[in-house]
Length: 290
Image (cartoon, rainbow, N blue to C red; front, side, top):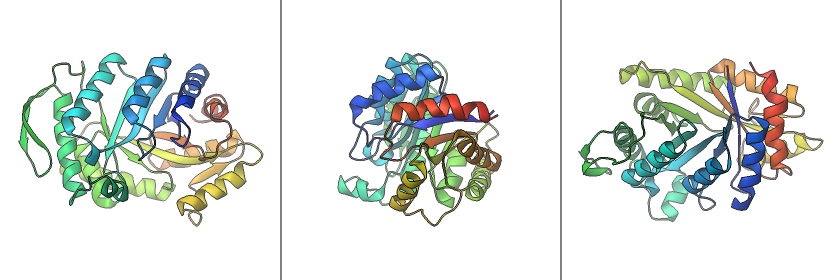
């Protein structure tokens, strides 16, 4: 079965999160994803609050930019969330937007090296290992978590280009694909991920999460068109869906058939009814997606 979720856009003020998360939880939505975009909202603080306000809803953060974070801190925060809310947390890490990283003085000369080192150390710490490493960016001296998760959780990586996708397959447990990735590129991403998995000798399951632009309501088509224009994706076909549940479900299934295990519907930044949007996904679209 394809997992279905929605995004709480950080263009909304943080105080809106409670109502949206609780509406999603009550409606039976499977996953609600958050972003740690500069300079909007914290991924970890928002995730902790959303998890505390809900009972069943899974909360994802896609993604935490590693240039902003010491890996030990990432591991501590991840372990705390996983122990407080077992089996309800999904965390992704990634390069971050390079212009933002430069803006805060954290841009790495080799983002790929940094991401590889961070992924390797983070997954080891969450497996309860004691880690000593002297990498180009990640340096740990006899570090271990005192309160690791009961079982090692999956660590997702955001990826776009071929090298990042191969790295994600090799060093992460799942991959997050941005909205604007059409089905044929999802299929190609899965191939590149599998190349990385083969290179790393990985045989475990690798989850692929794909975002999909979506809008509903009488002005949905116009809002979606404006959103794609803002992203610079207006010329790309099959990366969004507007209209009723049937139209949205068809677009979800195209991504699922191309290799996405999870599809997260991304509302427009000007979505007028965020609570209604998560209810629409859970109550109208979910029954149409096997």
